[in-house]
Length: 148
Image 1 (cartoon, one colour):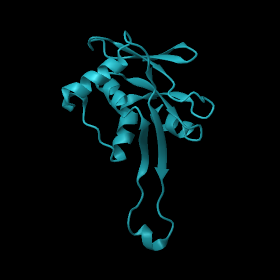
Image 2: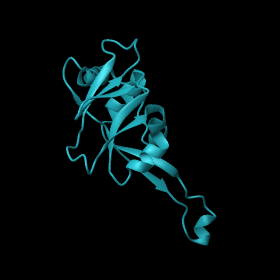
Image 3: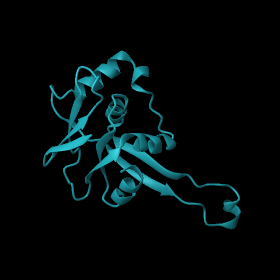
Image 4: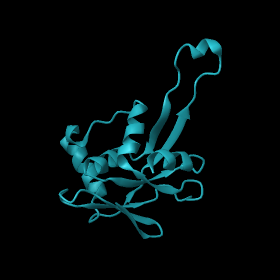
């Protein structure tokens, strides 16, 4: 669950058994909210489209202990507020020429993470069903259509 606590502050709920904290506080990474709005999305759908891009990031349990600890400290609300992940979403189309249509070049939807891929993976692994991310205003509707 995601809850807007203040105009520029969101709380993302993690699994109740996650320790030492069960929520994360996020502020926009980019201050221009007209250009880069904050949107609420389903974590599983976002991760699925992200992994299609070939940007595979191992699950948190496979990270080195130091990396896992660093990200956990970054997201711990007792230590402060983290930045929202920043993403883009694109829809690839088939090549227009007849020749190239013989080769399936369509790739469907893919999400790329510009900033915050480790925190995003951490929140997913900690049981966040929904998270907030920033996306360019021209891609907002496409992201909400497929991940909202």
